[in-house]
Image 1 (cartoon, chains in turn purple, green):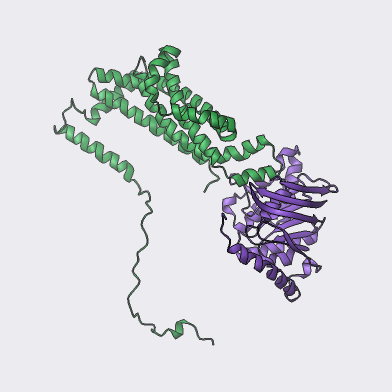
Image 2 (cartoon, chains in turn brown, blue; image 1 turned 180 degrees about the horizontal axis):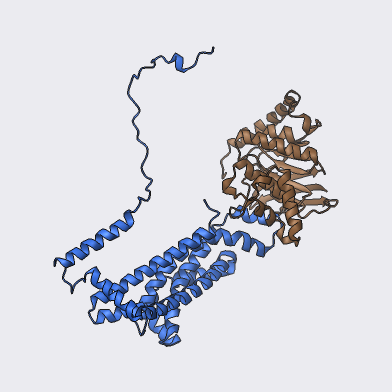
Length: 255
Length: 276
């Protein structure tokens, strides 16, 4: 399933947040959204998933979601959004309970996604017992459980320390190489963007417009050791981002 | 061999200079073993001693042993069970009805704009009224029997429960609700599985307040036109200047309060075991 974003404008009261966004998200590829803080990239992600209504323009789902898909547009949140009163298993089964699956089918899906995220031994742990990285793995397992058409990832690694971030980045690449998924990945971290993105979309400062779209054709699994090859792209992205970030940094919050 | 930092220490291994003075610590009170019960024993012991050697006149304050004898007499005659049965059943019925209604209204205030704007001012206006002042009115409405007593407790526990509940619902992490919506959970699922457990800590701490209020109102209600009940027993003892019985009655109330608080503590430990 592809997503087509056409002529999208969004305003909060009188303040324009997003301006004329046209974007295609193609099946089986990862689109990274980068931009200075407050540029509306998280807003764009909320619009794509239907958590907010755009002032203007359209977001269309083109094609059918995969078989057995329970929730085509599925988020992975920066703060994990796990229910503290449910175990890892409970948090995953939460999103299956409204779909009238049999108990056996639910257990099968939960076991499967726990295994795929390397969490089989932690099914009965409560979120407070888990480290940040493990919590985000549970959230990824929860998202995998509904077999989404598009993952919407809102800075999923930003709440983690840098070592955990590297581990989870490897996990995400591993998941994608085993079974390519479609994702919109919002981040402010250029390194993450060039390691994970098939296409990197740079947004300007508020109101967010698309400054440029950069495609990276190097396969994901080859990027770990390709720092040198990726460096020019990363430098180019930083040049773009730098001006915007500098200008955004010097704006008054309520001006 | 690489030279270590310690090996290059210019001050040398000998202790030169002043040690850093410790200035942290404190501000972390911890329970100290059996100190709580010990305070009880010491106070009651001094009281008994004062009564025995005549510092405390028996008419002003009876010795603990006399109050205990009055209590023992109550147990012997079996009267205590009649009083407790009457009191506890009023407490349980009034309090649980107040809780159920309070949680229901609190949830509707927490979830629906119309209920919020319509009911919050009403709650704010009625909450501060001492419910004891309404007891004569309740007697007219519900009769001198059980109805008026239960209504007093019900009204007294209803309002704090409403306030605790909608405060709890307001404080449920909105990100969790958004997560539920993003996975397409039904409205009812979100309320049952996200809002209710999220509000439970606040609701349970509200029960501590409403339980104390319920006991206070129970005694007040039983002091007007009740034959049995701890409040009636205390009132009668006061009228007869039987201070030993009065103290025995008050001790029963204190124990009742402790039992209720212990039960709530158990409930908290069970329902909130997901917290550390």
